[in-house]
Amino acid sequence: MNIERIDLNLLVYLDVLLRERNVTRAASYLGITQPAMSNGLRRLRELFDDALLVRTSEGMTPTERALELQPVVRSVLAAVERAVQPKKAFDPAQSTRVFRIMASDYAESTLVPAVLARLQHEAPAVALDIMTPSDVSYLNVEQGKVDMVINRFDSMPQSFHQTTVWQDGFSCLLSVDNPLLRGFSLESYLQAQHVWVSKTGMGVGVGVDPSAVQDLGWVDEALARLGRKRRITVFTRHYQVAVLLARQPHLVVTVPSKLALLMRDDPRVAIEQPPFEIPPFELKMAWSPLLQRNPGHQWLRRLITEVARGIDEQNPV
Image (tube, rainbow, N blue to C red; front, side):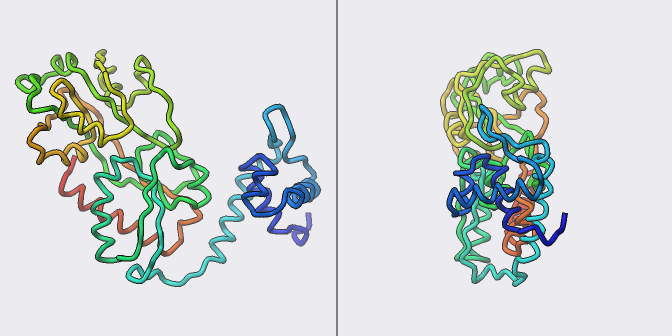
């Protein structure tokens, strides 16, 4: 194949077509007409001598050749974007940039307030658009539409850059009127009614199956290793709701320790160590390779890392 035959726009078309798997949606994303996109697909088929996308009962399905090309095309386009990106320095004091960050409300409650305090001093005109895990897909991050995601993740696309924000353990929150406080043990813990709270990863969640212990997370997996199981009466995806429910005299709420410490000045709530061992977890920050060398993005990543280190030193696991 003669390299001079390759139109870079065609690689952009192919990248979007393989993501969207729909000519109409791909055309809309690129802001071109459907006939123009169809013509682009025809030229791509000629260029690679392959159908690339085939209409099946499930819609437009990529061929084996197309699946081989997808990571290569993505890598080429990322390299081009890095090459043409302006190298001018980022001035936080003058910037009016809006950074879009997906964060669970655990990260939002424990990390974001301190980040905002730093921004007020160093970048007063910078704004944060905080999005929930249900607002964002991995594709949004890959395309750089979302600057970064901060959450607990069971898995992450290999192409993403990531770093550990901090490690956190678990604490139990109970009402000071909860009779369990007089003898908090594994047996009394298991006799109590519990609030389950979790929102890992990204995307829209589904209902919880209480019998599927392997899907309930760290706390219930730790109990399962002991051959025990707690009685969960409330399932929520909002950590702030969970800690407020700890004021109920009949409930026990087991949450990350840095979140539990936000309630230490509440006279209605007591903080206790779990009466069994729960392994710590990692809070991660991840971002698209498209933003790896962006000066403003690099600055914000450094700032968040520094803020997180300060919080971790004040409240170690």
